[in-house]
Length: 372
Image (cartoon, rainbow, N blue to C red; front, side, top):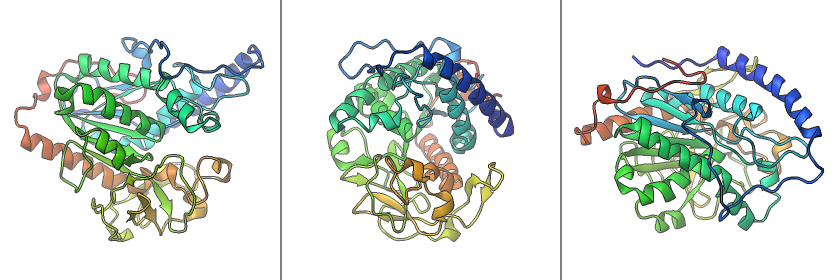
């Protein structure tokens, strides 16, 4: 039976990589000119990273035994140093370390739903990106990161998926890239779109205008529907700012009740959060987060979590105003998300008994921390 291993091993590996990369990247920085390199953008000729290279995969399940897959994209893990390029290299050590930590501690909520596949992809530095105009931001996001993600997803479909249904998962910048899969690749490939169980676009908004422009995409209306998008951004009760990860017309679903109205879900209904303890390690905790949808703003309001402990730090105010729980979009509702993903897979398989059997899958390799 498939088993993915996370925890202290990944944390130690990440810490080691961060220590090593900080020295290496500082040396590289001194070799660069004073001018910051401008990354390629939408419309430029961009050569995607090579996903035939096993080293460009954060995780690939070996000899998959589950009847469904989970394709995961990590959030922003790259922060440029000095005059480094605003876009990371595919082998950037600090980005890879951050990706491993995310997969072990948050992406792991979805590992019980299927065979896990997670590529590394070149990312933009978020602080640099937000200094650009909205138009430029879209051009850069649809440049290098999108080229890598679509190449990785296509390689996965052609070489690893073997016709199985799949879940898409992304948080923050990773969620923005899931939207590109939804609104570009799957729009052009309806036969692949038909196998999508659900897309978890977390810490990034999906708007009504986007759905109107992509009739093949639909937003979840409950806990059981499939072929749907699940999306929300989490903020405190007194949040009054504007999130860089949200947009006018955003739609949100309650991650406890899986309803879209404003009926509050009490903290007692939360199946459990997976948050950092005082020692900095992740553990299950009860009684942390309730949830209520603010339909006007398309946000999930959490009124019970300790803002001083769980909100984004003051150093991120440029991107995340006071009261944003961006880092805990998954952590607060970890076990609800886990149960929901498992349920949607079960619902899909019940409605599609012709889905390929797990034993028909093509054996693949596992890289990074997740292993059999």
